[in-house]
Image (cartoon, rainbow, N blue to C red; front, side, top):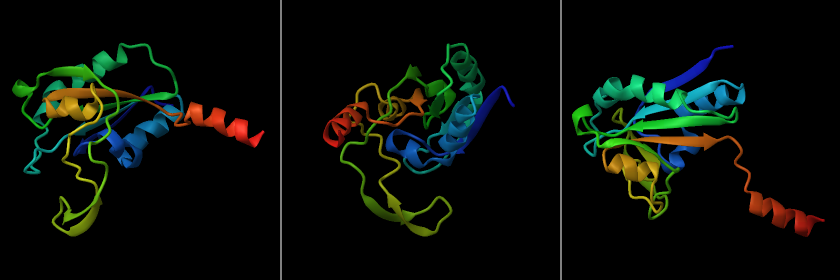
Length: 167
């Protein structure tokens, strides 16, 4: 078994709600399910959809070293998103909560990064967040967003309610 899973660097963001259907995050999740420290890494695109991996290249190794220096439960993975700017413009590295896009998710017709027309769920370039200290807000402010993600998606309060009505 490996000591570490690094998934990515993905071509585009994995922020907010997107982590639930990201292949990059899913690969890190599989590592975490096996008890291996796992980090998903993504490079955010600029609004004109051009991508440069300069921030990830310049900062990636140090970010991974810092993340690995933390105590780490086995049912956790870390999601890292590098902002859409050069390394000299990065404003910092932040521990973030998973964001939630303002305005919800819509179906949008647009071209894929490969030029084909498709229907997208949401505007993947939107970084307007309803949550302060979120990954979405961090990359909007040109910071590296580091989000610890827990594998247990169970909503504890709803479990209590369900047990009450099902008893």
